[in-house]
Figure 1 (tube, helix red, strand yellow):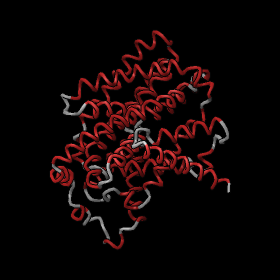
Figure 2 (cartoon, one colour):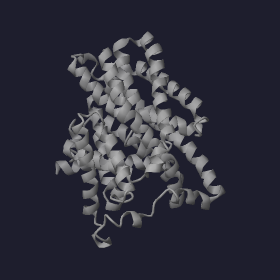
Figure 3 (cartoon, helix red, strand yellow):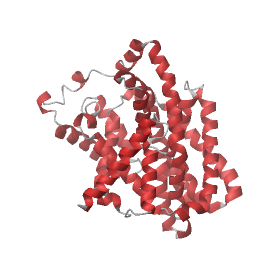
Length: 392
């Protein structure tokens, strides 16, 4: 019974977040509300191992991550992915802008240990928080081991509403484009997609056999191959990046179905599991920990956001993006997957209930957010965290 009660709490927290997001038309993102519920819970009555007791163990989450990353590849085609090099550039230069301001002004006011322990999490989200926590423990600096996690908690209070605001403004701009010529807007999405029936004719046993189990088995196979290749090259190519790339490639040649996990009917289950696992990281913080470094962390966040804004402001027009979309791409460094996916779909679902309009909005915003997030959180985060750990 205990497991069911903890699972009920997790789902109730998710629902409350979604409900508030819907009522506020995504001005307050669902993931932000859910994170606050978890944080207060861990500080009061919830056990630290809540997520594991709710069935979201580490092995299950590893499966979730692999399946979801490959699934994301089935939402894009190769042409669409290659077109997002501009989003990658903006996101990476935004990270550079953040590091420039925080390492200059931040070091001058707050000292070496605090800045070096927290800034990587500001530019690499959960991946950097995990790497920094592990690295700080390994060098015996136990006094600052909670700093990366504290930064992870605090910057989400700012980043989630800000990303949501930028996406909402970009969504309104795109809605005007759609309203001016819906037929042309729909055609721009349709023309990017290959005829699925032709792509799948060599990789299907027939419509009667396209079951959830078959779809999931194919996705799991590609995820396993991605991790195997990453291990084969000693981790020099991040397995998460390979999952996304191979998802796109095998979707392009017709081996994987369009929108695979939704077609299999398990997408929401996997996404809720992954989100719960990420929020479990909040169990390492205390009110005292956050209170001690709150002001320095907020200042570093402000410096980081200014650096990202300047970079995106300067690059938006040359790269043919709106300033809101460019800034949102830079801000993916603060969250990455799955937060970038959840925030984007959250905004789109609250902007319109028209399915065709939703597809148009997602087609224009989601690839940029996902690719920008992978460039920063999945790739750059590893290098940034490694560099900062050497400086401690």
